Image 1 (tube, rainbow, N blue to C red):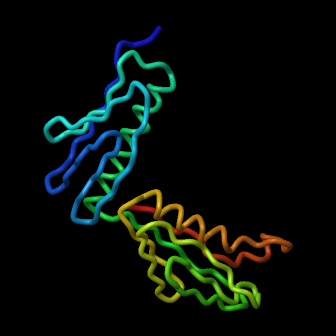
Image 2: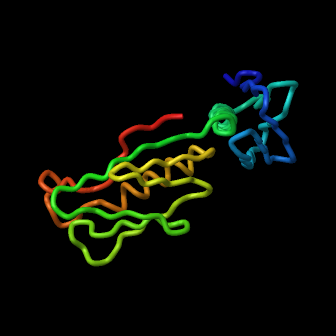
Length: 178
């Protein structure tokens, strides 16, 4: 049986501006501005006072799932506009000291396992990467860009052709948080 409607209400705190144009929602706060398109047949995203409402009339299974997904995306955007998301990573090595640096939109890893060529990881969006000794800090308003940058860095240091139980060198995520 199809339920008559599915509705998700997201509260917008003070100091955050939300504008909706067509299917694009823009969230602007002290930490930055985020924009995202929310296409979907039968799903409406509208602003009512201090709340954003994601609504679907007579939803099928796919639309019901999309209402929850869109609500989660909007909550992440509002939270990122208020305070930045922060991921912390640690550089681990046993013999060859790993040198890292940020060059434009690329994170460069040098001397990984003594390799002559540098490994590169892409920095997504407006994510800020800061290297302090053996700690790497990633911050940004968009949780998807921050987490994907952390995944790119971690995946750039995967070890191929060696036993991973012995060679545990790499750059690993140590904490995720807001």
